[in-house]
Length: 409
Ligand SMILES: Cc1ncc(COP(=O)(O)O)c(C=O)c1O
Picture 1 (cartoon, rainbow, N blue to C red):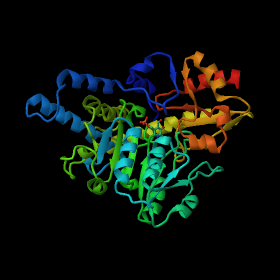
Picture 2: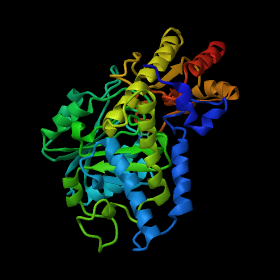
Picture 3: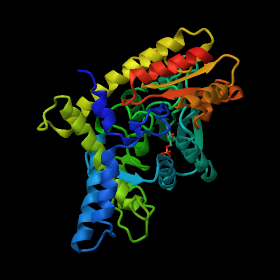
Picture 4: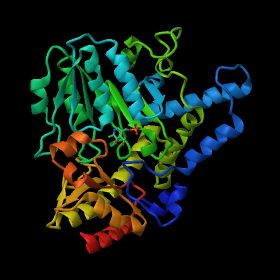
C-alpha cells in the first residue's frame, strides 16, 4: 500500500505552504496533534505537579502519560527507564557526568570519529579525571563503523562504547544489535546515539539489547526535547544528579533535576496518536497492539522514503562532478533518507546559496560530525551538502530540487 501523502501532510500545519523542507535531520516539522496537546495542557492543567488537588493530579497523569508514550515507542520494558530532558546533547552530557562518577583513573571509554560531537565531547571531557579515551575510527572505504576496527581497542579496562545508530552525514545504518552483542561479550556497556535513526525506523531497545539509547524529539515530529532510555538495572545503580534527598530508586526523577518540561512532555502523546492514526487510515485495525500499529506506520514511511532516496541518489550518482558521501544504494535495510554529497572544486555553501531562493531548505556544513569532515578532508570546501528527507516529503518536491540542481550542478 502507498502512503497517502495528502492525509500525512494535513497533519503538519507548516506543510500547507509550498516551502520544501529538506533539512529534516536538522529538525522535523511539528504535528498539529502535538501543538494541540501543548495548548490543552496550558488550558486545563497548568499547575505544579505534586499537589493532591484535582488539577495537579491531572497534570501528573498527563506528564506520566507522555513519558509512557516514549517507553512504548522504544519498547522499553519499564516506563521509568525513560528520562526526558531538554535535548540529546544535554542528556548525554548529564549521563557522562553520572557514569563518570562511577569510573576510576585508567578506566577506558571508546568513542567514534563519525558521531555528532554530542556523543564524543562529553565522554572526552572525562579525561580530566583520568579516564582514557580511545577512538573507534570509521572505515574510510565503507564509510561505516567496522567491528574489526573496534576489536583491538577493547581491553579489560573498557567500561563503555559510545557510538551512533546512524551517522547524521552518511545516513548508513549501523548493525547496533550485532555490535552490542560483541561489546557485551566483553562485559562492556553501550551508549547509542539514535538521533539520526529514530525519525525513520521504529526502535526496539529490548531487541537491540542496548544499555543506553538517546534521541531528539524535535526531529521526530514533536517539540524541542530529548529522551534517554537506560536499562533499569543500570539506572538503579548509577548515582543521581538531582537533590541529595531523592532516593536511589526514584527513577527517572533522580536524573531529572528540576523535572521535565510538563507541557512538552504531555505533547509527546500526539506523536504516538499520529502513528496510530496513520496505521488506521491505511487499513490497520484499531484493536491491534500499539507497537503493531506503529510498525505498520513506519513500514509505510520506509517504503516511501526509499522511493525518494532512490530518485535523488540515482540523479546524483549519474553526475560526473558529484561525490556522494555515504552509501549510494537506497535500500532501507542499510540507509535512511539523509543524503550528503559534494561537488568537485566547489564550496558547498555556494550550492546552498543557489537553492534557497527557490524556497527549499537544505543545509551544508559538518553538522557537528567534525570527525567525518576532518577525516575525509571536506572542511576545505565547507563540509557536505545535505538533503535530509522525511516521510512527508513528496516525489514532486524531490523532482523540483533535481530540476534546480540541473541548472547549477
Ligand atoms: C546524530 C545527532 N546526534 C546528536 C545530536 C544533538 O541533538 P540535540 O540537538 O537534541 O542536542 C544531533 C543534532 O543534530 C544529531 O544529528
